[in-house]
Length: 379
Image (cartoon, rainbow, N blue to C red):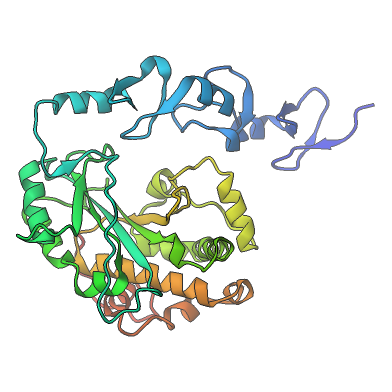
């Protein structure tokens, strides 16, 4: 006699001869189509959570490890047969052709996407260097060209005639005709008062670049992990609360980010709310999203916040950094239980009154205690 069974996804009752089993779970036809995938290589069926490829190339873990890799530039999943190699790095055909087109072009100021110099940490003299958190910024700009002369002009605004390393510039395969500006890690006070962001954004705009309006650009903020707790366990707890904050206030942060849900799903997806912060962290560690998550924990020394849209508006850039710092301080100073009871209004009224750019931006976006102000145009 057929034993009554239920779909692992929607819990509907399954009938004999009309259900599907995938990795030990049972599904109705509709959930089988939506919650599982067929590996493009071995053609076996697997749960969507076990897709080690991407939306275009869905493959199981075993096949991915044996026959696939990710493009060193755009991170698209490619089969070994379709892989192009340069300096021992794998590329898809598009990125390889772009590199080939630039083969005879000399770039003194634009580095390859994989370039990572030794970080130079900066803080203001009046700060306690033992306590402060450091933030690194990745700002993508587009529409003005991957142009070495333009890069030189922007670097001059950042580093001055002394050539002091404040900023470096890299290629980025996700951009149409632009580049990525990367800061060395600085304290929030240094970013707000010393770092020449106003000169950099003004020069980029004068050279024809856009960021918010390009539709291709992100503004990513890296947080030094070792400043999120004394021990590894303390850091893990802080990161779990950081992720919990993003999940708990997702709607407000989406509005803050200026991103569309579609763009977030592609470049900075959420993990999904869970009532316990540690459960969100554990779920993230087994996720197939990789670095394309709102809170990226794939880096050994930093936690990367990826959900913000790019901007060349100085106020928005500084407000974003002040927001990340405020969230960090908030999750360090509160327990799990306290965060459960914290509303968005509770959070925003606790913002440091010196963070005038953040407070103004929140008012522009109508996210600050119902005190909107006139909004200035993004770039």
